[in-house]
Length: 168
Image 1 (cartoon, rainbow, N blue to C red):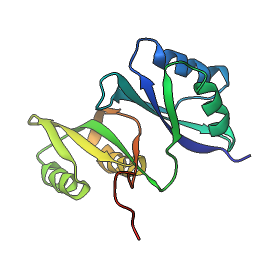
Image 2 (image 1 turned 180 degrees about the vertical axis):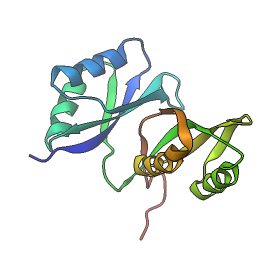
Image 3 (image 1 turned 120 degrees about the horizontal axis):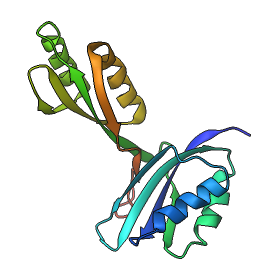
Image 4 (image 1 turned 120 degrees about the vertical axis):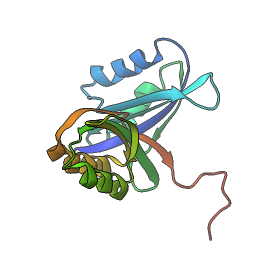
């Protein structure tokens, strides 16, 4: 069987302990959660959990059945593939010298980064994009001296909403 990365999106009741029960379902079946992002939806009583895990092809059906057994899980969807928009936010610090300042500023513009905060010798940058795009940004800035880095993990939505009129 082929191992591939899968993105699952879950709507759950926003209650204490829900995330730990979901994590237990994954760990008890030997699946590792690679990325995890949890936040309230527009309804504060419901949260969306988006996670990625590398697994074989029948993973989604198996794990969905187990997750639906949990009382607070309302919906589980597989958000893998090109029909879904995937993004992550990455913030990272980069060392700046008088010799590198102009090149770093050009790279910030070229990659569409944003300066979140800056001092004379250190910038904290934001980059939003797919994981491969953020990997490319990080690889470019690494030779300048990346100090620290943090990422949100994958968030995803269907590219075409059921609310939109049908496309011919």
